[in-house]
Length: 461
Image 1: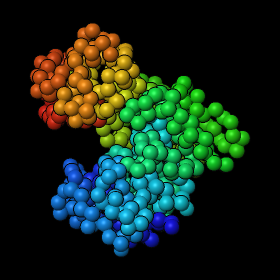
Image 2: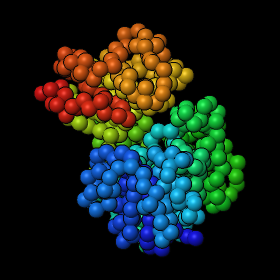
Image 3: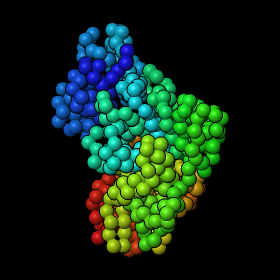
Image 4: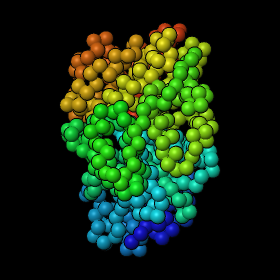
């Protein structure tokens, strides 16, 4: 059965409150499908967005009676467990059960599929490509993990778009499908932006993690294209140009110059193109996006024209507030490689200013004592380096207590400040001198509700 957006009219989403799952629910609703869903916890903004569309479940929890024989399919999100009562009911009835990536593939069988993979940079590269395509009026579908400026939803599925741009997450597809998501999309054009061991809970060794990208690379079909970071040592191990029927394209950081805290790209015609993003990792992302757009028929000059108005993906090195002597940015960074790249980019962009950088350890990997040594010397660049974590998160993830001394030892920085109370962290930051100083806040969480807008206003006043 081929699951085009129009052929499946009655769908039930298990774990509908997830970041990508609620966007899928909204996208299917927009297409005219009858969509229901369940979840045991739904947070903002998913809650308000589902409510506005009339898709918010009447109450939180799992209700097997919602899963009936007249459903065309059930889509299950990663938040659900294998013994989820609604999932068990769907299996009992013999209903078609899709994971998110399975459904996206089925819905895009007749499209050219571009899949952006990598431990870091994939959201930014995907965002860049979408921005350029939309700027030039191209028809396209997409599935991306972050809210993008100018896009209402993070998922779009239409009948007539000839291509789909997919952010290819390497995490597991569903509670009953242990394959990485990006193995299921069956790309025509694939990107590997960089490989840095992550998700220690499902990929216990660096070798096992790297193998997932090798499988992705080898899935590139005849006449397909694989675009990869040619300077990343881990990527080099998995993208050996071994298939004569595949086009391999390596890329590096875009040629550029930095003047007065601004970055300018240098084109082949020696023109200078000002951009709103900065840092070597973003310059690599731009190169990757340019190569993809070239494959999709976008000429260089048209790519640069569109790039001028690109502000970046939400929470990816995002400007919070700018003053005369200070800027405040937030970033989704939490992996060791991204932490190092972002801090280094800041110092290069503002070499005369002090850099105060705060990292929240929030993911399973980052809080795991077996993984923490991966952070050694990745936080050496900031003038003031701060790490925050909430002990309750450790309890929730069933991890052992984490002494502050162990964190300092892992980062190999004796002057590292470690906080476990967000109020104490806020007091410490308020007490800093912010003359000719920048603040960088990095986390996949929220620093436990720290009022960043208020803090940024004080820093930049």
